[in-house]
Image (cartoon, rainbow, N blue to C red; front, top):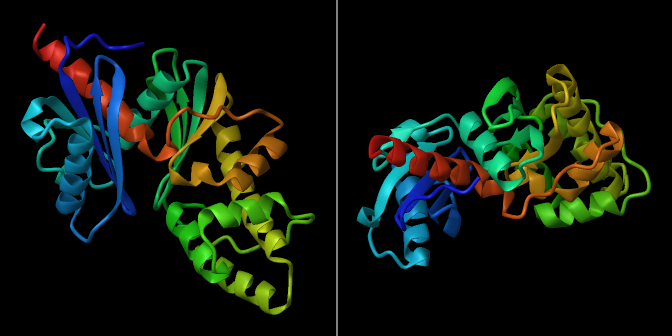
Length: 270
């Protein structure tokens, strides 16, 4: 599924609520990428991420990119984008390019979760989004790791090594945080708490997957896909093997944006 682009460079910039991501591609290959924390100004986040990716690619200037597609929650505020495309479309395109057998994608973003069903070309046939509550999003896991005084890697390891998952009943982030604090004060094993959090989120994501239905292999994108404990909980409850992607799962949307940028430029210059 590589795109022939005559040696030109193309960019994808994904600005979300918690991070900004940028990818530079050439002839269907990833040349460089960047992940930065979001600032209070999406325009600044976009510039920081894109400039870093351009520097890593050794290009010197954004003018060396033929076409740039912006995506993500703040895609309309990426000043240098030639076009803006939904993050749903870009994550689907990126996931399909990275793993052609994938037909179902769970994207866990900073402030929402999405489940997508794809066709054979990576176009979205159907999707569901949960943006009513922060539970299960990147911000939710950030709050949980803050309460537990650990990072996401440690959180994931504690979850994987636990013998019994604690029961987390709260459906909303603020109440779940209070419930976790109570469990800590009661002396409940931290690993069990982490596993319980992952189990509760997995149950909600699985309900979305089942509403969409399986269509080919399943993969997970977004920063929370790095939480191996959550992936393990999803696999066990779904009784499937989740496809691991060969790149950092946070840049899948930016990859999709860059691929679309190359296609847009080709179409405009055919």
